[in-house]
Image 1 (cartoon, rainbow, N blue to C red):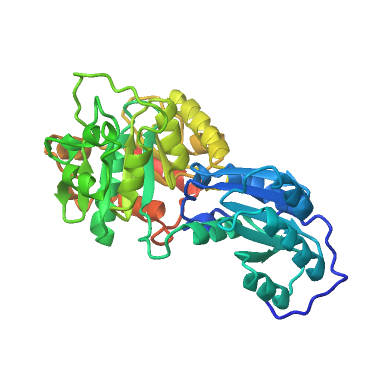
Image 2: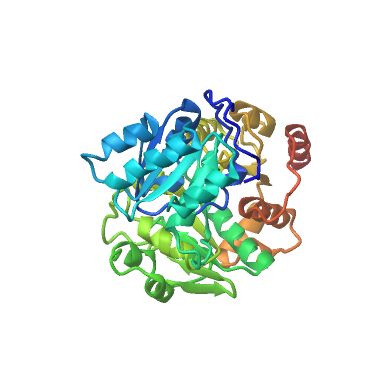
Length: 426
């Protein structure tokens, strides 16, 4: 905040909403289970708060927006309990604001945090508010990132370790190789960055991570998801199988001795604990659509859709992209991987046409190579272990950079993809 003097003639008309920049929310932690009530005077401030309430990071919190500002808040809390956080927008001059806050204090619980969004860039006012117990003062216009950063600062332990990023992989159709891509990207992250990675095979009846990593653990993800009351870092550590120096696996039982019907929140606690255990958590999600897969995709930090260049994949990928954009309005669009390009004698949609139909670029285009993939799968090895010099291994390394944000990899243009495909067909 600057030392600019208070200007009584400052214009307080509706402030235009600031655009959401997904990068600005990249490192914002999820908001804990709290209640938030906002009292606004302009739509320019109410709008971002309303959109914040729909953000995936707010899934545990409850937020309501009311119009009317400070006066409406004082009247409201005369007959209603105060929440964990009150956000007040005000256009009042400093003296009127301080008097109004005195009235609010008479009906507000002492433990409630109050954040004020004002229209006056006045450092003296800021200091007075802080001395009188106001948690924070922001000057409009405000963004979703501004508000969520303040909330997490107020309600998150400053000594808490950073949360690991969740990377969700799902196929647009069964059999497109989503699991194989997920496992190899996890391997790339662990080996390239020497950073801890947990792979969670969420396909309990038919998961293949244990085969791909040549593991046969006695316990795994089933024990975690059926014992959510016991799951913590210590218990999770006992369930993890070590695949490499920085790579651990939460394996699926891959058995049909029971049915695996889960509610929408079944995996939430497990994912939360895994995020506190490793810098990256790769979620291998089966090709089904139900409450828990939808919730997992909605709350993941990055979503990767794997598709092959066929019509059903195109239709499903478009439906998934459109749905996820609505579920995750403040995040980047899902990443797209086009796999198994150039299968001999198979009619295919060209990569450029596929991308044009989705109006997006591909994070990776992977050619059909049955020798490389088949050899690695049959030997329980990763692609890099089978042929480290393969261009496909380099592509997966680039994808690891993209999904973790560990550096910018040149994005292939749609025109360039046509050249790649022409080489594959030679």
